[in-house]
Length: 217
Ligand SMILES: N[C@@H](CCC(=O)N[C@@H](CS)C(=O)NCC(=O)O)C(=O)O
Image (spheres, rainbow, N blue to C red):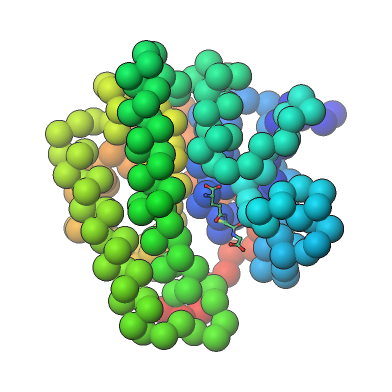
């Protein structure tokens, strides 16, 4: 029987993992729909017309709605599932603040750096990689400092802000080249708290697609 939520995704997509983690940790009735990113599916005219004009995953289908952008999906799911949401107007803004920071600085640089390092052909220019890694490290330092003072990103319990920032936290260091425990111990401890949530699974367990060994590491 068809599941209530369908998440278009693939295993290497940390942005999709944010939504998959939310669904898994909320005990939702969901299934992944494999998107063959590495063979160009998201660049296809038909896929863009039928599924997401932005050419990106994640895409969530639910009750006749099609949603894109992980932050929007997380916000929608928090409302629908009654989990990991804000408990006040102030918290709602604070969650949005961190999700925007995540999308602009925290996820975007590490995701692009990792993509070039692991999956791109031809291999990227070393100066480009150096720039992206530096930007990623700057964002990681900001989050690490925040987590030195707080157990979670907003308030005293996990919210969708944490699930958003956790998008790339569980990919192996051979892909990200970041050893969280050594370089960002507060992020590492926070990631462990997220991994301890009921229903937690890693990205390669939750989403479909073949593993690809890092190509340009
Ligand atoms: N801000 C978007 C980013 C989504 C995104 O960049 N997804 C990647 C996979 S992780 C993608 O589909 N990229 C396709 C492309 O850039 O062509 C979100 O949070 O959903």
